[in-house]
Structure formats: C-alpha cells, structure tokens
Image (cartoon, rainbow over all chains, first blue to last red; front, top):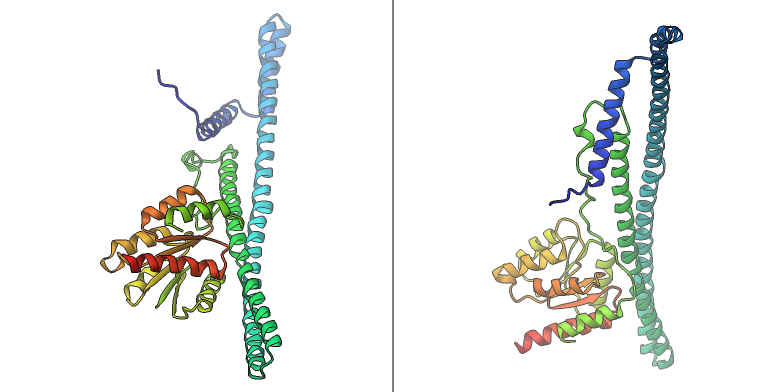
Length: 228
Length: 125
C-alpha cells in the first residue's frame, strides 16, 4: 500500500484552504454583534426551558471569539514574517553584496600596488646588477619574490567571494520562501494557486559553497588521477 | 604559445595572467565565462586553456566539454583551476576531458608544474 508523503507545500496549501473555509464560515455567521442578537432570543427562550439552545449560542460565541483571535495572531505572524523578509534578509543580502564588491575593489587595489612595487624593485634589481652590487641585487630579487608571494595570497578574495555568494543565495532562497509563507498567511487573498506553487529555486549557482583555502588531500587525489 | 584564461573573477584572471607571465608565458587571451571563451577559442590560435569551474552562463566543465566536442578542440590542453575539491568534481573534470587540475589557491611554481606536466604528456603522445 502506497504511503502518501505530505510535503511542507501540501501542509501550507491545506492550511491556506482551511483558513479560507473558516473565513467564509465566519462571513456566513456574521459579526459578533449579529451573533449576540441571534443568541439573545435563544437565551430568553432558554430561560423558559430550552437550556441546550442557550448552551449552543454560548458555544458559538466562544468559538467565534477564539477563531477571530486566531486570525489576529495569524495576521500578526504575517507581519512579523514580512518584517523579517523586508528589514533583515534584504538588508543582509545587500550587505553581503557590498562586502563582495568591497573585497573585489580592495583586491584590485592590492594588485595595482603590487604591480607598481614589482616594477620599481625590478628597476632597482637591474641597477644593482649594473653596478655589480650582488648583495643588493640578491636582496631585491628576494623582495620581488616576496611581492609575488603576496600576489598569490590575493586569491583569498575569490575564495571568500564564492562563500559570500553561497550565503547570499541561501538568504535569497529564504526570502522567497518567507514571501510564499506570508502569502499563505493572508487569509483574505483571492487566488489560492498564487500561493500553492513550488518553492522557487535559487539563482543559477556560479559559486562553490565548499570553497576553502586548505585542500591538500584533494590536490593529492587530483595529482594521482592526472599522473602528477 | 597563446593561453586562453577563463575565470569570472577579474582578480583571479589577473593573478593567473601574472603567474603565466612570470613563468614565461606572456601571450594570453582572457574570457570571463565559458560562452565568451568558446567564441574566443573559435577564433583560433589558442594553444592552451586554463579555466575556472564556477562561472555564470557556461561553467568551466561545460566549456571543456564544448571544446572537446569541436574538431579543433580535441587535442588542446585544458587545465582546470578551481576551488572545487570534492572527489566527484575531480572525476567529473576527468570525464569532461580536462588534462590536469589545480586547486585554488595555487602558487606560480605549481601552475608551471601542471602546465609542464600537460605539455610533456602531449609531446610524448
């Protein structure tokens, strides 16, 4: 016998449908005032001997009050979700993008500076060679190598930007899911299909979520496959 | 020998181009994704490809496959320089026809070692 697995989409859709039914039922019943008007003669009649009618009217009033309170809480929840979506997630995404952009700008500046420094050191190196000062020449050569080494470390920017890209994609995805949830929590929305679709996928990935700096084992594995 | 360096990060392209210059390969053409790289490769004259994996529009893996699918791309050496370190990724690169694999961050001597390794295998074949 096949088991039907309920996804979170199914649950949210069912919740949405149930809320619409409750809303419709409440509309049919009317307001608390109108219910009270209905209940009053019942209560009067009940006082003359129909206790069950009085009890029914009282139960209906309590049920109405509880459902109305529930709807209020749902509206509040929706507000909180929207606030989280708008104020926090969107801002966080913007900040991550700003950090990525700033590191790119900084890396470009570092590379520009290194290019200029290497050019100056190369000139000094040549002057030392021309003046036969081999000690100075060796020092400039060592300095040039150090500068090339620094250039190598600027690769951190690519690694961090990939991690930030991954974090931004996760936040973007969460934002979309909250947007859907917020739509479902809106009990008076007209179109059920608008909130019952599948959760949108993240933007196409062009980052590596596992980008890290130390990968000695993986490089050894690649070397074993490619021969060296 | 003309290199085609493919990476969406301008910083990485610059570092690779600098490293190539330092190890004796100053002739470099650049592209920022697989699609652009494929168009540049089609123009001809490329002897060696160094490509990243994660890029918009066309990944390095798809680019490698696309190059291998071309008559003039069957034998061109392809070196992948990437942060992707999972074994299945490295195996996928082998399947796509990549000749060697370097994990970021790398040093110019490591880059040269891999280029030399690929070229020596090509020369021996």
